[in-house]
Amino acid sequence: MDMDLLVAPIIIFLVVVAPIWLILHYRSKRQVSQGLTEEEFGQLNDLIAKAEKMSHRIETLEAILDTDSPEWRAKHGHI
Image (cartoon, rainbow, N blue to C red):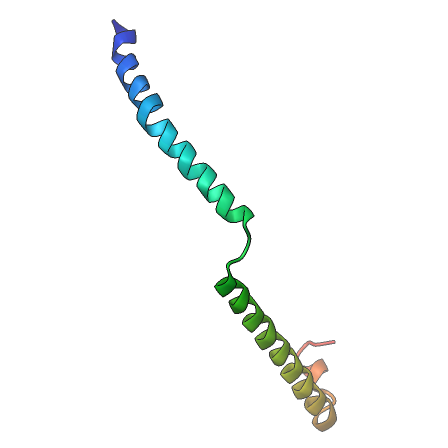
């Protein structure tokens, strides 16, 4: 009697839920393996360019501070 209560949900799971889950799972795996889209690649390149620009600005600011106030690193805990 107890087994009869489990048979229907198990059959519904195997016939309906499991195939949908497998399809969605492998579709997402395929999308991940395809890599970046053109738009994502462009955004990544933009971020790289901005990071390089910021790095250059920081180096410039540190050089100015080193010239104008050589002790600034020691005062602020930078070595």
